[in-house]
Image (tube, rainbow, N blue to C red):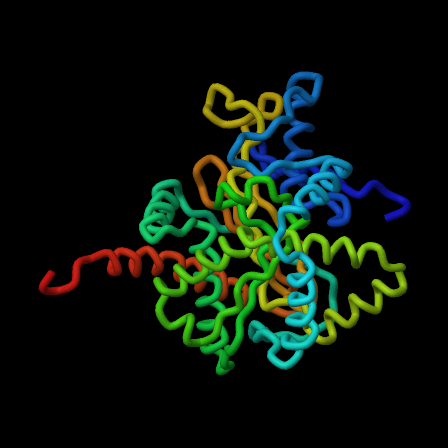
Amino acid sequence: MKKELPFRVLLLKGNEVESSLIFSFHHYSADALRALRFVKEVINWYNSGSPGDASLPEDTPACHRRDELLQWIQSSKARVRYYYPKIISRLFHRFVISLASPPSRIFHDRSESSGEVAFLHRSMSPPELGQIDAKSKSVNATVNDLLLAACFRTIEKWNHLHGKASKKISIMVPVDVGRQASQHIVSNQLSYVSPATMPKDREDPVALLRKVSRKSARVIRNGNAFSMIYFTYFLGCLSFSIMKIVGWLFIATRVYIDTFLLTNAGIIRLGEKGAAGLPRIGTARIVDISGVTPVVTPWGMGMVTGVYNGNLNMVLTYRPSRFSPEKAKMFFDLYQQEIRDYVVALESDLLPSPGN
């Protein structure tokens, strides 16, 4: 990290008409939303010779410079009721209660040691995404809530298929852009853990979706989001040697290392649309954009979703040292099917019962 810039750019030519432009960021320098902001500025600069207007739409989480972010956090602390009791409660749950009941892990068919990372890409069409959005709204939830609820049930089914029981399942969700209340929360400056679910919670898919929606909204509304931000900054004040020990304890005790990582980058916009209705870079059209998240050994797997040009893009990132390509594909198939099953379940829930 001391010898090179914290990001790289690579152009891969697939054929005569299609290429891939890959931006690779070290995580200490950029999170998902900051990376998208940087890419947008690069494209604007390339097209016009200057960075242009890098402002973001109102429904996209704001990206701040470092000093702005610190000022925003300090000004927000005063609005959090019972801040210190919440910090103490968080620490108690993480370092005491969580030790007695760690989250269930996802079954993996390999236990090797390698830093290699692979990924799979899928997408859902605009009509299918529109259906998911409409059905989610019918129970006062968001697409983000449905993706999270479907992930809970997928993990349980996956483990059951391999003869493994799932008790508590907890999923880390660094980004929640589905609500107006969270539009100014910066990706990965807020890394709150989703509500843990137990087998009884996951029996009824519609009830689970409602619970996920309520709990996610409550995290933002009651100030827990800010308490987690301050806890993270407190850790940043420690010496490097102490931070290494704390990091080792987090992994060894499975504290703050959850079953799965689910990141939603929200609606992705890159520059003005050209004649073909798609953003351009030079004379080329940007037909698709997807994100790949880093994965660490305790998870071994993670998911990034985002909406570009009306399509819901999903990328499953995994470590081949933990999951074979066949198993990774099976998990992705199961997740996509669970999302589609949710639409059917919500339709059935809205149908009038016999005699009404």
